[in-house]
Image (cartoon, rainbow, N blue to C red):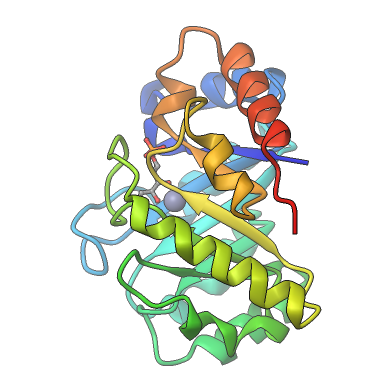
Amino acid sequence: MTIISPSVLSADFANLAEDIKKVEAAGAKYLHLDVMDGIFVPNITFGAPVISAIRKHSNMVFDVHLMIDRPERYIDDFVKAGADIITIHIESTDKVLETLRYIRSKGLKAAISVKPNTPIEEAFFYLCELDMVLIMTVEPGFGGQKLIPETLAKIKALKKYCDENNYSIDIEVDGGIGPDNVGLLTSNGANIIVAGSAVFKAADYSKVISKMIAEGDRNSYKS
Ligand code: DX5
Ligand code: ZN
């Protein structure tokens, strides 16, 4: 079953609570929260205080994507803010394993993300210590970019490796995804789909989310 995780990055920041309630009412089960520090990526967004403020307005799964340098310094803040899943970038720290274990020790789901140019094989080592791998389908930093087609092969390779080695994890994809190409991602093995502009720039959130779930399911991965 395809899960859509709308990215707040494309929401109306002046009316965040309203936008989030609308997306939840439209059928979204996850909410993707892009935290950027202007160092790991060339953009700055928001941090734990904003997540904590919107937590009161939503029951969705808070899917926190940390695009920050040495994220291990801030895990406690995001746990307290109400994150359900915390994703760290494999390229952002030399403490990947310790940080994944720490996130799980707090009762949360732990995930790693890989940028488009990072070989997916680098994620294999961590698979028994995590719940999800987030494969970036654009360079992290900004919403509204075009999906990089070369990243599709990474999804397939990860799915194959997980199947062969009995790892039952979620595969999330992020960047440049909408109703027209979601099937490409799910057919390669992704099951959690981040969508920023495709959802928040649409006139009807419910229509676009339902269409993306239907298209994702219709094209879902067959081994
Ligand atoms: C990019 C972020 C994405 C972004 C996706 O660095 O990680 O989550 O919001 O936006 P769209 O769906 O517009 O490409
Ligand atoms: Zn993201």
